[in-house]
Length: 398
Image 1 (cartoon, helix red, strand yellow):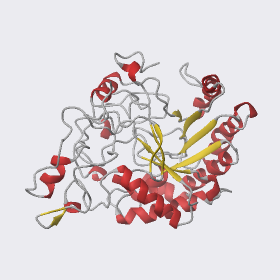
Image 2 (cartoon, rainbow, N blue to C red):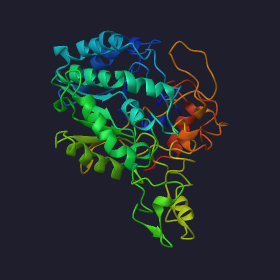
Image 3 (cartoon, rainbow, N blue to C red):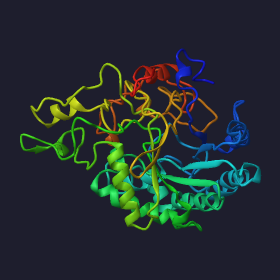
Image 4 (spheres, rainbow, N blue to C red):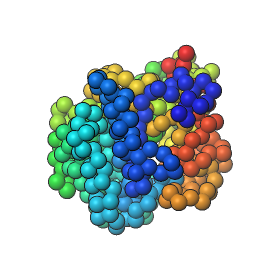
């Protein structure tokens, strides 16, 4: 309805997006919005005699998002029992209602949580005390394991565990470690690998699906593109190559060989007049990569309301080998976080990465944030962003 109310929004308002259960109150509906049963009842009506997929984001871990304030949650670092009994158990009770047995329910489990334990802890420059706490107390691992076990026991629920994105886990020191940690979580609190249908990458992020103007194997004047400032020694230049390779890594550590990947393409199209039409000049690796890359963020670590972004590939099933679907898990037009501090009762803090004047931190190599101005709280409708996403859509909108 929010998309359809925008000029031109009816072109995409019928696309499926994720329903974010990001606090206990969301199960019954907040601010006059639909609760979980409302969504499932509406899905039954939509379904008729056909098939219907319902996409849910399960997102309320204790100490949630230990490296970013805009998406902090309501539960403190030690409130694992409250997470289990007041969040996961009620969701599972609704989803297990026989009334909904004919729906195919896809759950995206706790975005950003486990990747934070890999990349933002210990002696790393990117580490935060909050992430060190969550690594030490084990409540991310326990919470994810419990959610997988409880939801995985329902026959028509398909769990996809969040796997960050290539600009987070694509480096050598994160890639294998992440797969091992995911296996640990998927075999804790009663969960088994059979409770995991697959993984999702790029949730609510902006990484380009496929960079076509250069590959990770290219060199310029004898210098590898991995040495460019943009790629910075990563092994992957885009989400598709990362997701396919990471799927193989996950299978190698013990996940089922039939797992599939989802890629969130809601905001990674990067179309419009600034989209490069060919490779950059071969003057040096930075000129070559920056001239050809579709992803026009200032730095790959920038994640909040990115200026210049566009809608990506429309949701579709089985688009590539190993990929179950391209999805719009993040509803385009919903803010990542507010540009300035806004008092609220949603447990959401103010993160300077959402402030367009911010000059950065170690997690984005101290670059400008690239965020749009005048943004509302995370999850709230951001009309200016939605208009830009439509304008810069790739493939373009009709």
